[in-house]
Image (cartoon, rainbow, N blue to C red; front, side, top):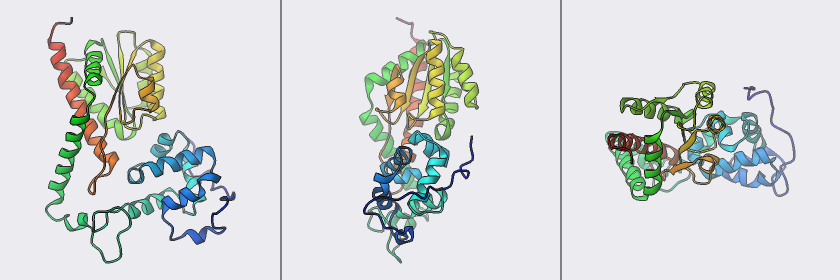
Length: 298
């Protein structure tokens, strides 16, 4: 993979209505910078800007490669975008987003005024663990209330009938993919998940029409995960997906897709809450598959 430092920020004009000197933007929030420069960005840079604007809090937890995958571009484009809006690089971008997304003392989003202690800061003593658990329970409760029952049942049936399951997941979804694989194996299912995405492609490529590729991806746009899916499709395997976005590439390409996610809160961003929900749903999937396989196939 090419180094993110090999392609310096492009010194192209920022467009009409944008200050001529980037130094004039020093106190301007990142989101305002992105909106101001968006018309003058390249298509790749614009996709990165849109991904940031969609969920700034989630970006704080992503590596430059993960953000690039989410935007369907290269890490170099992410670094170029940071330079285009007057920042020193991706780390500077993340630091500023984290500061600007910090909950204010009144519970609203945005930079906290000087001298104002946020509610999260105040509760870090003995209550933060309880609050985070409450957030977890809230997120799972919301997911349970909005779960697409028929889609979940179809996913269970697809996995339960498969001769073999090849599980794929990279980045933040990699631990979830490994976890559900271990749980499926413990339940008596022939499931495999390789730690290297190239090996995942090989496993998927050796599948048959009786097998299933189970793809786990919150964004549904990970290039590595989609490569494994394509390898499975080429071999005739069915594609099952657990993702956070119904309009994602993964959801559109899957034979069966279960869309799950969660909203953020003052104590947990949307990406983190969705990750918790994803784990809970995968656990429910394994339990349902185990029960389904215990019954005679119709």
